[in-house]
Length: 126
Image (cartoon, rainbow, N blue to C red; front, side):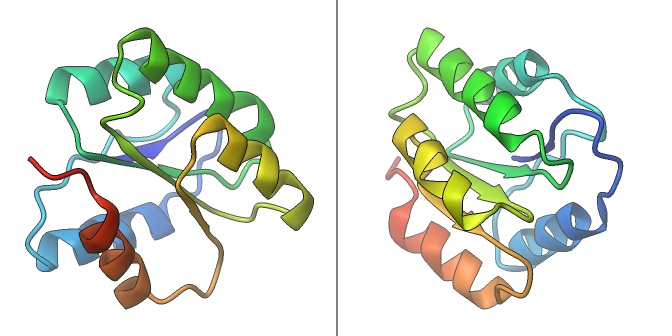
């Protein structure tokens, strides 16, 4: 699942990532814009996703991503879901997100091939 959380209205990168994963053979669900953290959690749990990619450019990552992680934990889905974050995330904010359980953070300029390879190597086996 590729998710856009909060009031961030810039979704070009999310569309690029979703298409790239589709073209690489993955089933992809796109959340659409302006989703609340609990909407993303509900969709992730209902769809039983293996990987949740959160695209965020609003600067609210320190508030919104932990809410998603807490929601996944509430549904016992945190350990079964590979959570990735994409966007402009300052270096000093990365350790906090990783402590919350984010597996990897991809910034601008990361090659799509590297992201796909990371998911292939780290997604939960089903």
